[in-house]
Image (cartoon, rainbow, N blue to C red):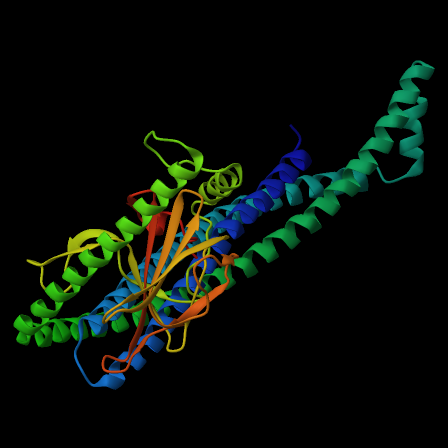
Length: 402
Protein backbone atom coordinates (compact mmCIF):
# COMPACT_ATOMS: atom_id res chain seq x y z
CA UNK A 1 0.00 0.00 0.00
CA UNK A 2 1.49 3.37 -0.98
CA UNK A 3 1.94 6.17 1.54
CA UNK A 4 -0.61 8.46 -0.13
CA UNK A 5 -3.37 5.85 0.24
CA UNK A 6 -2.28 5.06 3.81
CA UNK A 7 -2.54 8.73 4.82
CA UNK A 8 -6.01 9.03 3.26
CA UNK A 9 -7.20 6.05 5.33
CA UNK A 10 -5.71 7.54 8.52
CA UNK A 11 -7.38 10.91 7.90
CA UNK A 12 -10.68 9.14 7.11
CA UNK A 13 -10.51 7.15 10.34
CA UNK A 14 -9.87 10.36 12.27
CA UNK A 15 -13.13 11.86 11.00
CA UNK A 16 -15.07 8.68 11.89
CA UNK A 17 -13.54 8.69 15.41
CA UNK A 18 -14.38 12.39 15.91
CA UNK A 19 -17.95 11.79 14.66
CA UNK A 20 -18.55 8.90 17.10
CA UNK A 21 -16.97 10.87 19.96
CA UNK A 22 -19.13 13.92 19.18
CA UNK A 23 -22.25 11.76 19.27
CA UNK A 24 -21.39 10.38 22.72
CA UNK A 25 -20.34 13.82 23.95
CA UNK A 26 -23.62 15.27 22.68
CA UNK A 27 -25.60 12.61 24.62
CA UNK A 28 -23.68 13.43 27.80
CA UNK A 29 -24.23 17.16 27.33
CA UNK A 30 -27.99 16.57 26.91
CA UNK A 31 -28.04 14.47 30.06
CA UNK A 32 -26.06 17.13 31.94
CA UNK A 33 -28.48 19.84 30.79
CA UNK A 34 -31.44 17.69 31.93
CA UNK A 35 -29.87 17.17 35.37
CA UNK A 36 -29.06 20.86 35.77
CA UNK A 37 -32.70 21.69 34.90
CA UNK A 38 -33.86 19.12 37.46
CA UNK A 39 -31.64 20.67 40.13
CA UNK A 40 -32.85 24.16 39.26
CA UNK A 41 -36.51 23.07 39.39
CA UNK A 42 -36.01 21.19 42.69
CA UNK A 43 -34.34 24.32 44.10
CA UNK A 44 -37.43 26.36 43.18
CA UNK A 45 -39.63 23.79 44.98
CA UNK A 46 -37.31 23.86 47.99
CA UNK A 47 -37.44 27.66 48.13
CA UNK A 48 -41.24 27.46 48.22
CA UNK A 49 -41.23 24.75 50.91
CA UNK A 50 -38.72 26.65 53.07
CA UNK A 51 -41.14 29.59 53.24
CA UNK A 52 -43.15 27.65 55.82
CA UNK A 53 -40.14 27.87 58.20
CA UNK A 54 -40.89 24.26 59.21
CA UNK A 55 -38.67 21.21 58.97
CA UNK A 56 -40.88 18.72 57.15
CA UNK A 57 -40.53 15.31 55.51
CA UNK A 58 -41.36 17.05 52.23
CA UNK A 59 -38.30 19.27 52.70
CA UNK A 60 -36.15 16.15 53.21
CA UNK A 61 -37.61 14.44 50.12
CA UNK A 62 -36.84 17.41 47.89
CA UNK A 63 -33.37 17.78 49.34
CA UNK A 64 -32.80 14.05 48.75
CA UNK A 65 -33.95 14.44 45.14
CA UNK A 66 -31.51 17.31 44.62
CA UNK A 67 -28.65 15.28 46.13
CA UNK A 68 -29.44 12.33 43.82
CA UNK A 69 -29.50 14.60 40.77
CA UNK A 70 -26.26 16.27 41.89
CA UNK A 71 -24.51 12.89 42.33
CA UNK A 72 -25.69 11.82 38.88
CA UNK A 73 -24.44 15.13 37.47
CA UNK A 74 -20.96 14.52 38.94
CA UNK A 75 -20.93 11.02 37.41
CA UNK A 76 -21.88 12.56 34.04
CA UNK A 77 -19.12 15.17 34.30
CA UNK A 78 -16.66 12.38 35.15
CA UNK A 79 -17.76 10.52 32.04
CA UNK A 80 -17.24 13.66 29.95
CA UNK A 81 -13.74 14.06 31.41
CA UNK A 82 -12.96 10.38 30.70
CA UNK A 83 -14.06 10.72 27.07
CA UNK A 84 -12.00 13.89 26.66
CA UNK A 85 -8.93 12.16 28.10
CA UNK A 86 -9.38 9.32 25.58
CA UNK A 87 -9.73 11.84 22.75
CA UNK A 88 -6.69 13.81 23.96
CA UNK A 89 -4.55 10.64 23.98
CA UNK A 90 -5.84 9.67 20.53
CA UNK A 91 -5.01 13.14 19.25
CA UNK A 92 -1.49 12.95 20.70
CA UNK A 93 -0.89 9.59 19.03
CA UNK A 94 -2.37 10.85 15.76
CA UNK A 95 -0.17 13.95 15.78
CA UNK A 96 2.94 11.81 16.44
CA UNK A 97 1.99 9.44 13.61
CA UNK A 98 1.26 12.30 11.21
CA UNK A 99 4.51 14.06 12.09
CA UNK A 100 6.42 10.85 11.37
CA UNK A 101 4.61 10.45 8.04
CA UNK A 102 5.26 14.10 7.24
CA UNK A 103 8.99 13.66 7.81
CA UNK A 104 9.04 10.60 5.56
CA UNK A 105 7.08 12.48 2.90
CA UNK A 106 9.55 15.36 3.09
CA UNK A 107 12.51 12.96 2.79
CA UNK A 108 10.97 11.25 -0.22
CA UNK A 109 10.15 14.58 -1.81
CA UNK A 110 13.71 15.84 -1.21
CA UNK A 111 15.08 12.75 -2.98
CA UNK A 112 12.75 13.36 -5.92
CA UNK A 113 13.82 17.00 -6.14
CA UNK A 114 17.45 15.94 -6.08
CA UNK A 115 16.82 13.37 -8.82
CA UNK A 116 14.91 15.97 -10.86
CA UNK A 117 17.72 18.47 -10.38
CA UNK A 118 20.33 15.90 -11.53
CA UNK A 119 18.24 15.12 -14.58
CA UNK A 120 16.89 18.59 -15.22
CA UNK A 121 17.86 19.11 -18.88
CA UNK A 122 15.37 18.34 -21.64
CA UNK A 123 18.22 16.66 -23.54
CA UNK A 124 18.72 14.08 -20.76
CA UNK A 125 14.98 13.31 -20.67
CA UNK A 126 14.84 12.97 -24.44
CA UNK A 127 17.87 10.72 -24.47
CA UNK A 128 16.20 8.54 -21.85
CA UNK A 129 13.23 8.09 -24.21
CA UNK A 130 15.20 7.79 -27.50
CA UNK A 131 17.63 5.26 -26.08
CA UNK A 132 14.77 2.75 -25.93
CA UNK A 133 15.24 -0.39 -28.00
CA UNK A 134 11.61 -0.53 -29.17
CA UNK A 135 8.73 1.86 -29.71
CA UNK A 136 6.77 0.09 -26.96
CA UNK A 137 9.64 0.62 -24.50
CA UNK A 138 9.85 4.31 -25.50
CA UNK A 139 6.09 4.67 -24.86
CA UNK A 140 6.44 3.05 -21.43
CA UNK A 141 9.29 5.41 -20.53
CA UNK A 142 7.28 8.46 -21.56
CA UNK A 143 4.34 7.18 -19.51
CA UNK A 144 6.63 6.59 -16.52
CA UNK A 145 7.97 10.17 -16.73
CA UNK A 146 4.42 11.58 -16.76
CA UNK A 147 3.44 9.37 -13.80
CA UNK A 148 6.59 10.40 -11.95
CA UNK A 149 5.76 14.09 -12.45
CA UNK A 150 2.17 13.47 -11.29
CA UNK A 151 3.41 11.49 -8.27
CA UNK A 152 5.78 14.30 -7.31
CA UNK A 153 2.92 16.81 -7.53
CA UNK A 154 0.70 14.54 -5.41
CA UNK A 155 3.46 14.20 -2.82
CA UNK A 156 3.72 17.99 -2.56
CA UNK A 157 -0.07 18.27 -2.12
CA UNK A 158 -0.05 15.48 0.49
CA UNK A 159 2.66 17.28 2.47
CA UNK A 160 0.51 20.43 2.54
CA UNK A 161 -2.61 18.45 3.56
CA UNK A 162 -0.73 16.56 6.27
CA UNK A 163 0.66 19.83 7.67
CA UNK A 164 -2.86 21.28 7.69
CA UNK A 165 -4.25 18.17 9.43
CA UNK A 166 -1.51 18.31 12.10
CA UNK A 167 -2.20 21.99 12.68
CA UNK A 168 -5.95 21.30 13.07
CA UNK A 169 -5.33 18.36 15.42
CA UNK A 170 -3.05 20.55 17.59
CA UNK A 171 -5.80 23.20 17.74
CA UNK A 172 -8.33 20.50 18.67
CA UNK A 173 -5.98 19.21 21.34
CA UNK A 174 -5.63 22.67 22.90
CA UNK A 175 -9.43 23.13 22.87
CA UNK A 176 -9.92 19.70 24.50
CA UNK A 177 -7.40 20.51 27.21
CA UNK A 178 -9.26 23.75 27.97
CA UNK A 179 -12.58 21.86 28.05
CA UNK A 180 -11.10 19.34 30.45
CA UNK A 181 -9.91 22.10 32.78
CA UNK A 182 -13.38 23.69 32.73
CA UNK A 183 -15.00 20.34 33.48
CA UNK A 184 -12.60 19.70 36.37
CA UNK A 185 -13.48 23.09 37.86
CA UNK A 186 -17.19 22.38 37.34
CA UNK A 187 -16.80 18.99 39.03
CA UNK A 188 -15.12 20.55 42.08
CA UNK A 189 -17.89 23.14 42.31
CA UNK A 190 -20.60 20.45 42.16
CA UNK A 191 -18.77 18.39 44.80
CA UNK A 192 -18.76 21.43 47.10
CA UNK A 193 -22.52 21.90 46.53
CA UNK A 194 -23.06 18.20 47.22
CA UNK A 195 -21.11 18.30 50.50
CA UNK A 196 -23.19 21.29 51.64
CA UNK A 197 -26.47 19.57 50.66
CA UNK A 198 -25.52 16.35 52.46
CA UNK A 199 -24.70 18.35 55.58
CA UNK A 200 -28.07 20.11 55.27
CA UNK A 201 -29.77 16.70 54.94
CA UNK A 202 -28.15 15.50 58.20
CA UNK A 203 -29.52 18.62 59.97
CA UNK A 204 -33.03 18.08 58.54
CA UNK A 205 -33.09 14.41 59.62
CA UNK A 206 -31.87 15.45 63.07
CA UNK A 207 -34.70 18.03 63.36
CA UNK A 208 -37.30 15.52 62.16
CA UNK A 209 -36.22 12.95 64.72
CA UNK A 210 -36.91 15.48 67.46
CA UNK A 211 -40.60 15.28 66.56
CA UNK A 212 -40.60 11.59 65.63
CA UNK A 213 -43.64 10.68 67.71
CA UNK A 214 -45.82 13.38 66.16
CA UNK A 215 -44.65 12.54 62.63
CA UNK A 216 -45.19 8.80 63.05
CA UNK A 217 -48.76 9.54 64.18
CA UNK A 218 -49.26 11.57 60.99
CA UNK A 219 -47.75 8.77 58.87
CA UNK A 220 -50.19 6.22 60.38
CA UNK A 221 -53.13 8.57 59.76
CA UNK A 222 -52.14 8.96 56.10
CA UNK A 223 -51.65 5.21 55.69
CA UNK A 224 -55.14 4.56 57.10
CA UNK A 225 -56.63 7.13 54.71
CA UNK A 226 -54.69 5.57 51.82
CA UNK A 227 -56.04 2.09 52.65
CA UNK A 228 -59.62 3.43 52.84
CA UNK A 229 -59.16 5.15 49.48
CA UNK A 230 -57.63 1.97 48.05
CA UNK A 231 -60.67 -0.07 49.09
CA UNK A 232 -63.05 2.56 47.68
CA UNK A 233 -61.21 2.51 44.33
CA UNK A 234 -61.25 -1.31 44.31
CA UNK A 235 -65.02 -1.30 44.87
CA UNK A 236 -65.55 1.23 42.07
CA UNK A 237 -63.47 -0.80 39.62
CA UNK A 238 -65.18 -4.04 40.69
CA UNK A 239 -68.55 -2.36 40.07
CA UNK A 240 -67.37 -1.32 36.59
CA UNK A 241 -66.32 -4.90 35.82
CA UNK A 242 -69.63 -6.32 37.03
CA UNK A 243 -71.57 -3.75 35.01
CA UNK A 244 -69.53 -4.62 31.91
CA UNK A 245 -70.23 -8.34 32.45
CA UNK A 246 -73.94 -7.66 32.83
CA UNK A 247 -74.05 -5.59 29.63
CA UNK A 248 -72.23 -8.30 27.68
CA UNK A 249 -73.97 -11.27 29.39
CA UNK A 250 -70.47 -12.53 30.21
CA UNK A 251 -70.44 -14.42 33.52
CA UNK A 252 -66.78 -15.52 33.36
CA UNK A 253 -63.88 -13.84 35.13
CA UNK A 254 -62.00 -10.96 33.52
CA UNK A 255 -63.04 -7.60 32.16
CA UNK A 256 -65.40 -7.82 29.15
CA UNK A 257 -64.60 -5.05 26.66
CA UNK A 258 -66.51 -3.66 23.72
CA UNK A 259 -64.51 -3.51 20.44
CA UNK A 260 -64.02 0.24 21.03
CA UNK A 261 -62.82 -0.27 24.63
CA UNK A 262 -60.56 -3.15 23.55
CA UNK A 263 -58.94 -0.92 20.89
CA UNK A 264 -58.44 1.88 23.47
CA UNK A 265 -56.98 -0.59 25.98
CA UNK A 266 -54.50 -1.95 23.40
CA UNK A 267 -53.50 1.58 22.40
CA UNK A 268 -52.92 2.48 26.07
CA UNK A 269 -50.72 -0.62 26.54
CA UNK A 270 -48.82 0.12 23.32
CA UNK A 271 -47.84 3.54 24.74
CA UNK A 272 -46.27 2.10 27.89
CA UNK A 273 -43.21 4.21 28.76
CA UNK A 274 -44.36 7.02 26.43
CA UNK A 275 -47.38 8.39 28.30
CA UNK A 276 -47.17 12.07 29.35
CA UNK A 277 -46.80 13.11 32.97
CA UNK A 278 -50.06 13.81 34.84
CA UNK A 279 -48.69 17.32 35.55
CA UNK A 280 -46.76 19.59 33.22
CA UNK A 281 -43.69 19.65 35.47
CA UNK A 282 -42.69 18.00 38.72
CA UNK A 283 -40.46 15.56 40.59
CA UNK A 284 -41.36 12.15 42.01
CA UNK A 285 -41.45 12.75 45.76
CA UNK A 286 -42.58 9.26 46.75
CA UNK A 287 -42.19 6.09 44.71
CA UNK A 288 -44.56 3.18 44.14
CA UNK A 289 -44.66 0.15 46.44
CA UNK A 290 -43.19 -0.57 49.86
CA UNK A 291 -40.06 1.33 50.89
CA UNK A 292 -38.43 2.74 54.05
CA UNK A 293 -39.44 6.19 55.24
CA UNK A 294 -36.77 8.77 54.24
CA UNK A 295 -36.16 9.81 57.86
CA UNK A 296 -37.27 6.82 59.95
CA UNK A 297 -35.78 3.64 58.54
CA UNK A 298 -37.83 1.43 60.89
CA UNK A 299 -41.04 2.79 59.32
CA UNK A 300 -42.27 1.31 56.01
CA UNK A 301 -44.34 3.32 53.55
CA UNK A 302 -46.70 1.46 51.22
CA UNK A 303 -47.71 3.55 48.23
CA UNK A 304 -50.24 2.30 45.66
CA UNK A 305 -49.07 4.94 43.19
CA UNK A 306 -46.56 7.78 43.10
CA UNK A 307 -46.56 11.25 44.65
CA UNK A 308 -45.42 14.06 42.37
CA UNK A 309 -44.30 17.36 43.87
CA UNK A 310 -45.04 20.35 41.65
CA UNK A 311 -45.52 24.12 41.77
CA UNK A 312 -48.33 26.13 43.35
CA UNK A 313 -51.35 26.45 41.04
CA UNK A 314 -50.39 23.38 38.98
CA UNK A 315 -53.10 21.43 37.15
CA UNK A 316 -53.61 17.69 36.93
CA UNK A 317 -54.01 16.41 33.35
CA UNK A 318 -55.14 13.17 31.71
CA UNK A 319 -52.34 10.88 30.60
CA UNK A 320 -54.44 9.33 27.79
CA UNK A 321 -57.82 9.41 26.06
CA UNK A 322 -60.62 7.90 28.13
CA UNK A 323 -63.88 8.37 29.99
CA UNK A 324 -64.29 9.81 33.49
CA UNK A 325 -65.62 6.95 35.65
CA UNK A 326 -65.98 8.85 38.89
CA UNK A 327 -65.20 12.10 40.68
CA UNK A 328 -64.56 11.34 44.36
CA UNK A 329 -64.39 13.58 47.41
CA UNK A 330 -62.04 12.17 50.08
CA UNK A 331 -62.16 13.92 53.48
CA UNK A 332 -58.85 15.64 54.17
CA UNK A 333 -57.50 14.70 50.73
CA UNK A 334 -59.62 16.88 48.44
CA UNK A 335 -61.15 15.70 45.17
CA UNK A 336 -60.06 12.80 42.96
CA UNK A 337 -60.76 11.84 39.36
CA UNK A 338 -60.84 8.27 38.03
CA UNK A 339 -60.53 7.81 34.25
CA UNK A 340 -61.11 4.54 32.39
CA UNK A 341 -58.96 3.63 29.39
CA UNK A 342 -60.43 0.26 28.35
CA UNK A 343 -59.36 -2.18 31.09
CA UNK A 344 -56.89 0.41 32.52
CA UNK A 345 -57.70 3.15 35.05
CA UNK A 346 -55.75 6.30 35.92
CA UNK A 347 -56.46 8.07 39.21
CA UNK A 348 -55.57 11.68 40.10
CA UNK A 349 -55.81 12.80 43.77
CA UNK A 350 -55.36 15.94 45.89
CA UNK A 351 -57.39 18.46 43.84
CA UNK A 352 -59.18 21.49 45.24
CA UNK A 353 -61.20 22.07 42.06
CA UNK A 354 -62.24 19.65 39.29
CA UNK A 355 -63.16 20.58 35.70
CA UNK A 356 -64.78 17.26 34.65
CA UNK A 357 -67.64 15.01 35.73
CA UNK A 358 -68.53 11.31 35.47
CA UNK A 359 -69.26 10.26 31.88
CA UNK A 360 -67.11 12.99 30.26
CA UNK A 361 -64.83 11.95 27.42
CA UNK A 362 -61.31 13.30 27.96
CA UNK A 363 -58.27 13.52 25.70
CA UNK A 364 -54.53 13.18 26.36
CA UNK A 365 -53.16 16.13 28.38
CA UNK A 366 -56.67 17.54 29.00
CA UNK A 367 -56.75 19.57 32.24
CA UNK A 368 -58.72 17.84 34.98
CA UNK A 369 -58.45 20.21 37.92
CA UNK A 370 -56.36 22.43 40.22
CA UNK A 371 -54.13 20.71 42.77
CA UNK A 372 -54.41 21.60 46.47
CA UNK A 373 -51.89 24.13 47.70
CA UNK A 374 -50.92 23.00 51.21
CA UNK A 375 -50.30 26.45 52.73
CA UNK A 376 -49.18 25.12 56.12
CA UNK A 377 -46.39 23.02 54.61
CA UNK A 378 -45.93 25.22 51.51
CA UNK A 379 -46.22 22.35 49.02
CA UNK A 380 -48.34 21.15 46.10
CA UNK A 381 -48.55 17.42 45.39
CA UNK A 382 -50.42 15.07 43.06
CA UNK A 383 -51.04 11.46 44.08
CA UNK A 384 -51.26 9.41 40.90
CA UNK A 385 -52.21 5.76 40.47
CA UNK A 386 -52.52 3.31 37.57
CA UNK A 387 -54.63 0.16 37.65
CA UNK A 388 -55.20 -2.73 35.27
CA UNK A 389 -58.45 -4.26 36.42
CA UNK A 390 -58.07 -4.80 40.17
CA UNK A 391 -54.25 -4.68 40.16
CA UNK A 392 -52.13 -1.58 40.73
CA UNK A 393 -49.23 -0.80 38.37
CA UNK A 394 -46.01 1.15 38.88
CA UNK A 395 -46.69 4.45 37.05
CA UNK A 396 -42.95 5.08 36.57
CA UNK A 397 -42.88 2.24 34.02
CA UNK A 398 -45.65 3.88 32.03
CA UNK A 399 -45.07 7.64 32.00
CA UNK A 400 -42.34 9.09 29.84
CA UNK A 401 -39.10 9.63 31.78
CA UNK A 402 -37.78 13.00 30.55
